[in-house]
Amino acid sequence: MAQTLKLNVNGANRTVTVSSSDMPLLWVLRDLLGLTGTKYGCGIEVCGACTVLIDGQREHSCVFDVTSAVGKKIVTVEGLAADADGRKAQAAWIANQVPQCGYCQPGMLMVTVGAMKAGHHGGEIASEVEHICVCGTYQRIKQAIQSL
Image 1: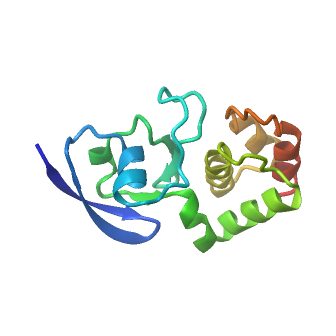
Image 2: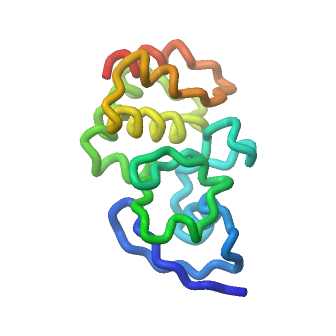
């Protein structure tokens, strides 16, 4: 049964109509709101490509029910430009030439920014980034994080 929900995404209130209350947030972000920076990877919370921040905490949007996001602040990679920590992390990624294909990078950036907001630094952040990167840019990722 279709359900209309109000979500706060990247600081803007958005209304969506979902076909099912257990629809994963990932599909709402990508398919209904057109925010395609958040990626689908594994669908089982392993790869991290779907990571977003919900009330400042990282969540895997591939398994996070959209109804659980109602009343919370959702931040996707598209919203990082409006955030000081987000801009700082993105600048570190660019300066260290991290992305190759870039598929996993949005999730890694989201975890990094969430850790920065929690007061973590350097090695603490690096240990939280447990994503799978097929390109294998782990050394550059580590360098970018260490530069924050």
